[in-house]
Picture 1 (tube, each protein chain N blue to C red):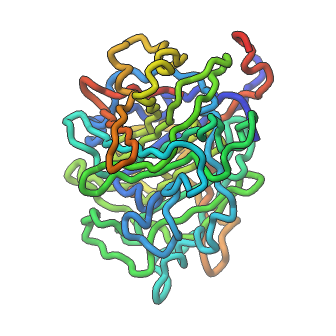
Picture 2: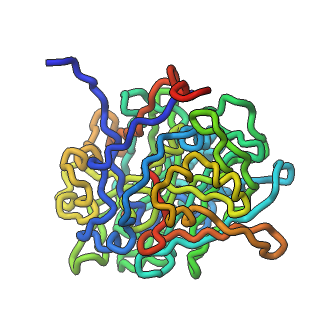
Picture 3: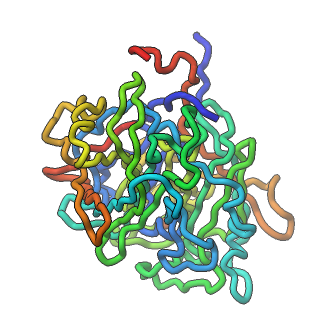
Length: 240
Length: 208
Ligand SMILES: [Fe+3]
């Protein structure tokens, strides 16, 4: 699908760059104003990834790294749709996700949390959305973990998401939280988002209608990417 | 009351965090056997048209320390200025070119590297040609929303001069932050493009 330029990003809805409560942002936040760049082809186009790129177990974190058994923890299914701001499903979107294991430990050289690695859990997966924008994957519910910011800051349980829509301007990385987790409202990274309503949209509800009985519970997480103008009347403002 | 526009809000961004490589380049950070190869590692093959180049650089924080946990993605046109994307309606791009690259900074030095080709010119909205450029997107721990910027080529002075975006930037002293110098490194034309998140030479970032 082609289309016109993307709707302007609402920068008051997203976290600002400089958020001193999240200390690392202090030296990593641009201080000058962003320069507005009305989308050209360079921003309206983007890479597409075919379903043939995706391996059979890519969306199954319970099995894609398993060595001699299954990972320890609560078995869950995460599912939802990738939509645009007009509510249309975005087909063919690449969704990548990564997370800590059931004890809150990441499989990464620089990770120092004392909770143990799970030999059967890698913590990464990916999938491509169907024609209606839907996606799903199976995993273990990640544990919360402490992190060096304040002396006693803990991340709520979360799954990181990276999404490619149809244009590079839609590129987005965000995090999914779990309904009912009290740590959400104490987290300095969550608190970088100014509007509580925007945070609530990142909290996935428990979805008992989509559980697999005697196997796994489900959480539903819809993701909204920027919408775009129709191509009609484009490129006619000056010359051309 | 008027009718509702009834639009959804974009999902709010959250930082990619310190472990973005687990999800985006797992082989690079030691999680092997899940994906055959990290996404965006190879942009070209033996049959790709155009001049082979390397783009290398580092991302610096406000203290002048290179980030070692960033992820840099690039998106660019092929040698004829066509994007390998369904949104490209002017023609068919080189089937041997992906246009998309993804690089984790080297764990020791923070240096990102792309082996690619020099892109052709892509038209601006009004039909004028833009100077050859690469679009970059940078995420890392401490970056709350991915940063979009561009890299232009230092050996394209005339095209850069006429570029509709570069020529519109009011603070002329900042324009060089978008232009990479060309040199030969190990026999390969190399464009060195460091990015500064803050400070005197803060790179221009775009609200696209
Ligand atoms: Fe995390």
